[in-house]
Length: 460
Image (cartoon, rainbow, N blue to C red; front, side, top):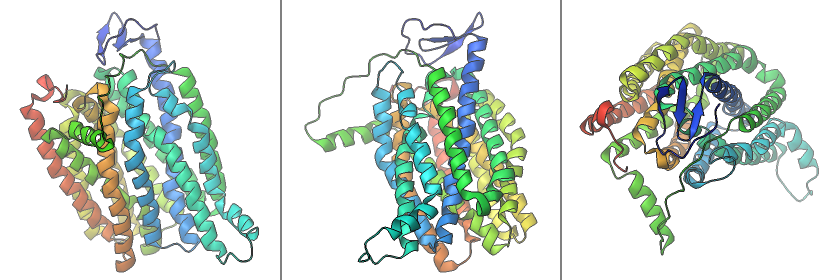
């Protein structure tokens, strides 16, 4: 990496004489390789770390006697915290200026606490009974309820800290990665994520019934080391001063301005609806393990292998999507991913009747998800104003997490009532289908505003 030059608000420029420029940063080929390697290492460990909680926590709660509705509440709590804190964290990061930049401090300082609370969550079945034995006799609460409560406290503390990383990690790419390489870079990110998913599914998830605590511990420590290395080896450039904040006499005027700015264009309103439906569809992942284990009689090893084989089979999809995003643009690729996933889920409702058919559906589902993820961030990079990138990403989270809160609770209640996890397929198909319609409207408005050649964000 070469030294930064004078401030340049443009996010990136084409390579000249073997040098890539992003704002005030310049990269030669070696500097670009180092940047990619550090980010990809962090992404690998982040994927492993974030595979642990959603996969293992429902199993922990079930073993302690928790219902599907309780598990749904856990997801709703996380979504509610995301809805409240995401705009604050994202906007604060957009406006922060410091010696480490505007994104890296938000990744570095929460990292030790993320690792700590992740590990404590894993050991809560051991910590809970010990703490319960220390309670006064007048506290009439069972060991299992107390342990469930303690587990949820650790989960909430983990979620609060992890929100800083979950928000800001995805924004740093726009500040550091040349936009002309964004599609291929996101394809590499997805490849690394799928490699992590393969490792998790093939060798780790099956250990959950015997070594659950070790999985939490190992994921926490590996994540801690990799993110400290990322934050100390990657640096940001210089940014122009943030725009002055207009005075508001009332606190709700700030909120009104936040939403009016980020929802002023029809394109963004349809985009928000699409992202809402994408996230509500993903609520069903919480119960995926129970569908395979309880309805079809599959072992945890087999369920993990479904994810592992899906990760491997999706590699050609990632390579193709990375090329297609740079060639044809991310907007049309996101729309295609939604349509594909809706069709797969519809077929899954009628065709899944054995472990083999579950394997086929799982592999196709992972391919559709990876297709979507590989195109989503490049689409944000193309549609949102770069100066307020975090703010615009956060408003999609606000609306999405409000829908996810209702979705988690509603799906949990629905499954407790129906007693059949097959209805997860209907849930997914409906969400993907509505998302595809919303994405079609995004595409129409995008074309009206100039398409790939002449589009400029309406707020710029």
